[in-house]
Image (cartoon, rainbow, N blue to C red):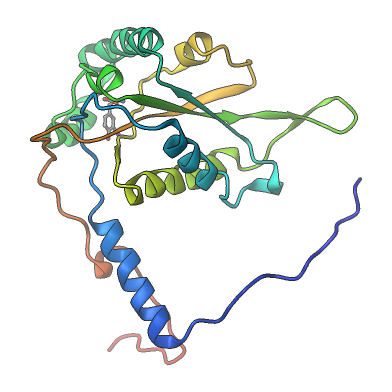
Length: 229
Ligand code: IYR
């Protein structure tokens, strides 16, 4: 077992007004993010994808095992193969596997088995979760909280893409096993999320959804309890 080493935390205090201003600016910027299914075919520099992945790689994660592999595809032949395989699964999902209770909440979002974004977007980024790791002694060992870790990392990826002025869509073909096969990933890696990245198409549309208010999503218990007021 390696001994832990520690270094000083690099941290600068902000003034209360800067904290508030930053918090408001970040909220506003996040509020402007939307998921669209309408991507332009316009090319995106590989460096921008690298930066989004590097941002994702800063995520806090279980035991600092960084249990993720990001596969970025701009190759048109491979994108087409991914689309064909995804649509094959999705057709069965939409036509046979999807219970009515699920179809009912998807209807307002206008999703269907046609996955045009997989070939329109200049990049598809697939996030693989590493279920196992190699230990120092060469034996297989588990990873910990890999799903949570990858979920947090995906959030940072999505945020980075948005802040660079691009759009992405969290697509979840089910089952996803075909992705490991097409992209040559080892068996201990499980595809978790497919994210086309690019510019929105001219005239791109988004569903007219509403986000829950703070009161609907949060509960506070403060020092001065005001229960039953
Ligand atoms: N995986 C399908 C269905 C789907 C499921 C949920 I939950 C969504 O929010 C959107 C779609 C698909 O990607 O179309």
